[in-house]
Image 1 (cartoon, rainbow, N blue to C red):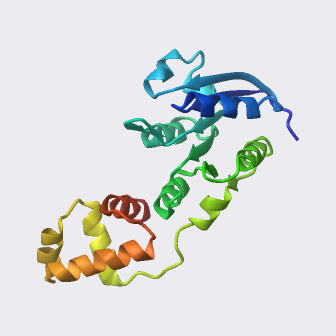
Image 2 (image 1 turned 90 degrees about the horizontal axis):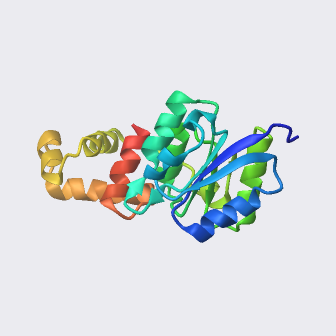
Length: 201
């Protein structure tokens, strides 16, 4: 049951979305709620970040990403609740959330009622992943040793030519492996594959 009074920070750069989130918190015991449109706006916080009980975070804020904030919150105040509310619900995002210890995530493409369920889960000390995030869970697939080798080199920023030289395989073979890995992990861009590789290895 909800008994604790809670300080909430909403990190969201779209004002209408932020106000909608704030309105959905009204039925909960929230004593303080602030909207931050950017990471730099954190300087205006009345409380230290560690005094915020629940952060509701959009992963992308214009040209900024909130991953460093999430990592720092996890390091400095492990008990702080983090609810990610984002348009990005790919398998690599889900894998990164798992790696960061984030247990509340809702895709903006899911019905907004799922946001209510995630907020409710926070107040009841439970985890919640919306439908899209449950479907985006790390693919249940086995990687060959060669695929693992290529993923490791991708995380180091190696180009196709560099991977080809290091593994003594042709550039065409490297491209075939990259394509196969992108299909396995349901990503469409090389940058997404690189981010996924960093999350998995």
